[in-house]
Amino acid sequence: MSHAATLTAAALALLLAAGAAHASPEQDRAVIAALDTAYQAAVERNDADAMAAILHPDMILVIGRGEVFTREDLLRSARERDVVYERQVEEEGTQIVRLYGEDTAIVTALLWLKGTTRAGEAFERRLWFSDTYVRTAEGWRYAFGQASVALPGG
Image: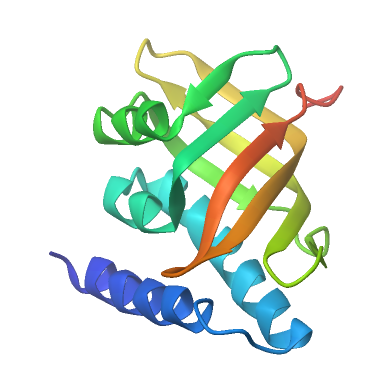
């Protein structure tokens, strides 16, 4: 395991453990914001292990075209490197974490995607997403995602 991967794994372990105990709303928002940023970075690296640590076992993603992807679909795509990302990042200043009770949170942000598919097709687009996190006995987990279609103009 590379040094970067080791550091990422350690940071994820701390973040996930911090989400298991009930914390203040500010602490929960900070943990969830960091987890969502870490998730986007893991997708960018095609780091299926880091993604798996954050994803809820029953997680699904619904994209703007109406397609539904399971946790296993996302992990398989990362392992097989269906996309090589140059960018998979939240636009700075767009992330908002909203808490709903003690055990549910929704993150919204503008996402910038740039990369190449396995078929060699280059792409660049921006889209809005909403990621729903739930608190479990193991900590906060990403349970449901919804992504818009690509915004006009990339």
